Image (cartoon, rainbow, N blue to C red; front, top):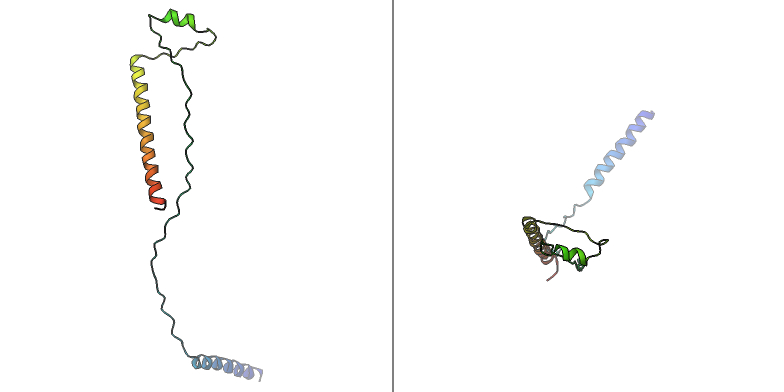
Amino acid sequence: MQKVLKNLILSVLFFGTLSACGETTIEKVPVIETRTVQVQRPAPIVPSVDQLRLRNVEWLVVTPENVDEIFQNVNSDEMVLFALTSNGYEALALNLSDLRANIQQQQQIIALYRESYEKP
């Protein structure tokens, strides 16, 4: 008897659910409209570069003609000599020139990035 009662209750629930679904009206789903909007990228926060303040460097050119004069005028406790050949000096000058050109190229690249991201 309980089995029959259980089946009857399940049947009523099942058909009641089906009939409830049939009675509701299906509303039209609104069409979703998609639009593409261009958004400006925020400008990158780029810190400004510190101003380069180079210190003065005193250069003494020591040649065979003035070596005695240089050694007499400079305190022996302060004397340190750095020597370059003419080819070494040329290489040093060319390296500094290449470094300057590389820095200028980097500055141009940074300027292009700033122009592309900052607001007009």
